[in-house]
Amino acid sequence: MTSAHSKLYSDDVSLVVVVVDTNPFFWAGAALPFADFLSHLIHFVNSLLLLSNLNHVVIIAAGVSSCAYVFDSGNAGASGAADVAETLGKASRKMEEFIKQDARETASNGTVADGGAASLFSGALSLALCCIL
Image (cartoon, rainbow, N blue to C red; front, side, top):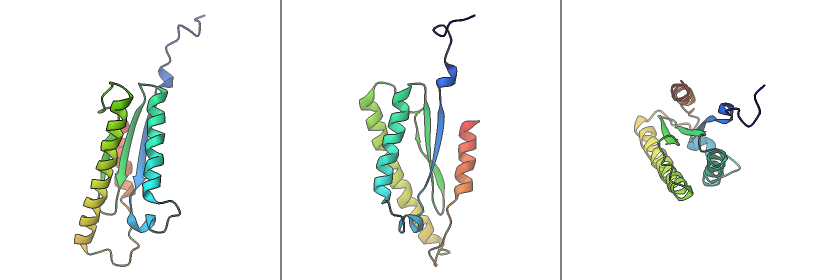
């Protein structure tokens, strides 16, 4: 019988895919401002990455007109906590750029007049499946 110390803990490695709905029509009526949510999300991702250096986290943003990868910890450097903070800062800026780009695309479409547009959540789930497989 093998001891617990010699066992390889491959089941401790996690892949977490977070899909963030950036629909401004939803966040306009939400109790929590989007900036506060994004701050909490960054802390959540940071805690997952600190649990194990083998954990993999991907953040996908789903907007009204598009969806995109915003953060992939597999592309982040492994040189320490300062690098993780810098990488999450870049992810925050990339999320802001995505929201601005999605707002421009939504405004140029002209199809969203009543303020009840749905996000491309199914497209974001498709991206998540591509990431998992």
